[in-house]
Image 1 (cartoon, rainbow, N blue to C red):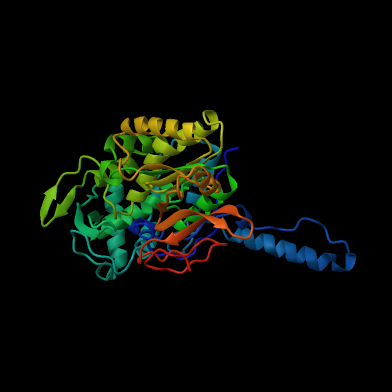
Image 2 (cartoon, rainbow, N blue to C red):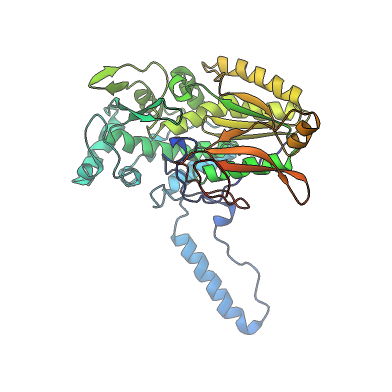
Length: 436
């Protein structure tokens, strides 16, 4: 049996985990569940004395629902247009549908919602315009921005290159977009989310509405504890955001989007280049980490490169249990059989090479890990099982002293991690990585 734990409840507030990727977006604020639709009683009341009153309440409820169009929440907490709800419905019902008309959903109202969804204290891009400055005369600015977007005269500006320190001491390059680019990107992401949230696999958690690092960690622990996992593949794609092929990115988007105006906007952002110390440089591949549109493009890229392929592999090739959890470009897989883990790793390397990507040879490891790993290794005199880190937490094999059975435990691995642990696991932060 091959199973992944899929959780779509609203996330808890989280800080940074393994990297800034775990907290640099606010896209996972709302999610529409099956139980969110209005429920109207249809059974007739049993007592005649109560029939009139109850029937009256029912009619009033139905009238109220009709008067309020069913709309999805935007990331800013406002309500989304009924038209976007129709896009999601069409995407769900017609999996092969290519959407030819999407730009008309970019309205002045949506641009306003997108503006207020941005971080107000964020650093400015190359335009030097801050959020508070743009808010002055906002309506006129949005009307002008809307006009330029629909006329095709909107110009993407290069991202301003800055660097932030990584845990290993190196520098991570970020690209800060100009404010108007952020606004339009936010609007386009909101539209495309209606399509791709229907398509994305359940084991994908990064930068998705209603999903969080909290849930990715929970899914991983549940998979390790409940499935027959004896080997773990901790995979790291080297420089993923910097090496995404522009050509393949466009092809992947075109699987579902046929609106040339939306595609041109995406291509403008990909080719806008970067500005560092006042010097512009061309970007022939990759998408800037820090841009609003980049996480969605990354998820689409890995949806076709990894998710669909890995899901088919575990269903058609694997004979033992296989679990998968992916958060953006960080992924962990569990296997029952070592031979299948080795085979998957080799085929995964070949798969990535076709799309201009590769695994980091030093950060990608296949280790013996699972509920029974400690007991097996002790029998063979191999010592304790190795550990691996995912989203700021080091996972290690432990033992329940009362029952002498195996368990999977975690500990925070750096001081910057403030992520809330999943239910059933309560840990206090400690710089030494020890569990309290």
